[in-house]
Length: 138
Image (cartoon, rainbow, N blue to C red; front, side, top):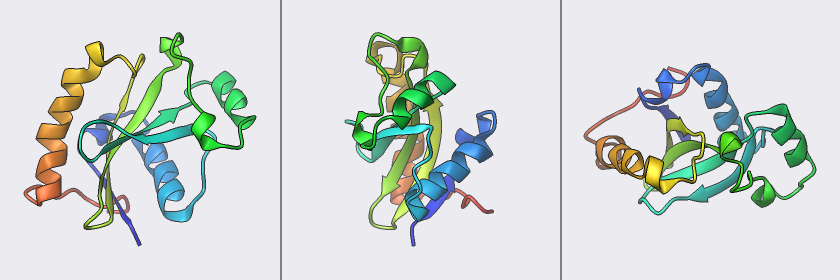
């Protein structure tokens, strides 16, 4: 069974426990919450993102889509463009919750260096085992 780990950065998010519970239920139990949209890999090794519905309006639009792939925000709607970032280590079958990115999460100009820092400072050390993070239930 896969494990879900929590980074210190993720714990800085308001109500991080709710996001972590949704993520656990999604990845471990197969229960897709209404606030989760498209789940895709980024171009940084091991980092993935899930589109987030941060308003009831977006959630109601997404509820009309049976296919998770189509649950995204419009590119011309930066105020509703949020991602939940996580890393995945296939070798250990572990997920590491990283942070929530947004608004305008698709803007590499705004978020590119931040993403590279997360990759270098959090994801790479975790993958090689030099840093250990607690399980969701610890």
